[in-house]
Image (cartoon, rainbow, N blue to C red; front, top):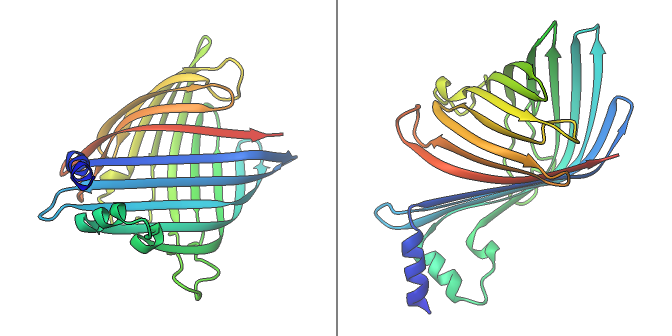
Length: 274
């Protein structure tokens, strides 16, 4: 009934939910070239109570194929390129409480009637470089070189361009018997097109883990600093699926410490190749 629905939504306002799914099945490696189809979707819903209750909803989905090539420059430098062709579908809208109730009470309305849908086909190029003179690794990553704009941008209501991103990082690993202890520091999105406070772009993390049957660690603990706040979590690799559980904070205002929102994230990832 409308009364029970109203009660459920009333109890939910003030909550934020975020979900992400990534799949990369059937990857193929031939020498220095990797070819892999991929699917990724991230979904966000924010039920908040300003003067008038409203719902902020976003669903961003990609699917396509990635072709990566890596090459050694001397003995200590790795250079890689990654070309992605994909289709993007973006749903995003701010809904008033009356809109949500009307949608739930109607059997004729579709999601497209309530939430704006934007689509586009993209080509995107990434490039990365890792310099490893000894135990330390120094990295540079440039994503969506020149911005990734939809190729069918003149038709209908296309999804927006994906901004170019430049990130810098440093990494060090220590062997502790059958366990490894990793430390990493990175400066994400140096170009900063959204004009964030730069303290939000600095990240530090450490990971303690070990492996039994896969290339990376199969179980471990992680902790660090993200957007100026502490983050901690754990993961386990069940061969076909890797499960991650993380507690972190997202800054909703301009600078760290102003309006942090602490959240839990649970993710499941699967990658297969031959």
